Image (tube, rainbow, N blue to C red; front, side, top):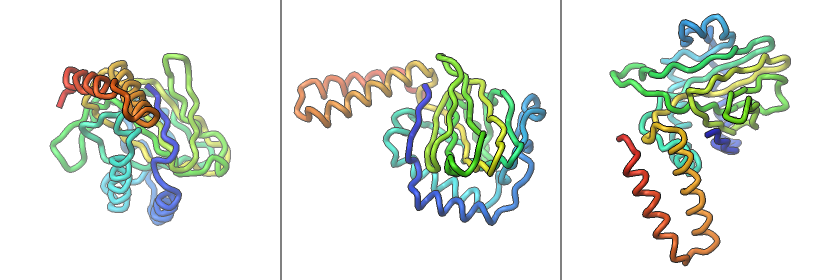
Length: 226
């Protein structure tokens, strides 16, 4: 499932992030690349242990914890602390697939990367190129969202970032281990949850709301790994 969230961060939060990121010295993005990705990754990142990056990551995760669409689509069990990258003119990231297991820096925990997320921090008019291209069931999907927008997609998908031809593309990225490992089951639960919310809004006294809610939770109880 490929899920776009239009305002994962508010305009004020995006401005706060941009101001903080301007204070940081970026490093070669290949520091976190796997063996096969090193030759195709051409961007810059904030060091994983940078205090500003960690602070911004906490703010982002707090915001997503209050974002119903994200919680419903991801059903997060564990999240790798968000990282931040920068693509200047001429930089790109060729086709690759994310590693299946990621460590959490400074902890003994490891995270199975069921889902990947990219949060856009540059406005679309600030740069040309830089689209995130995700190989989906229905073919390659190009994603370029306004600042504050987030896309969530299976980490098992082959994906790449097209070369930036003008300006600078800023983003945050991270991985999620979901309570429900299988993408098709997460999709079914998401669709059911959205339908329940719509029914509650349009027909709040409908007798089927309780039945559908019970079905949702019984399926989640059957499929969740916590």
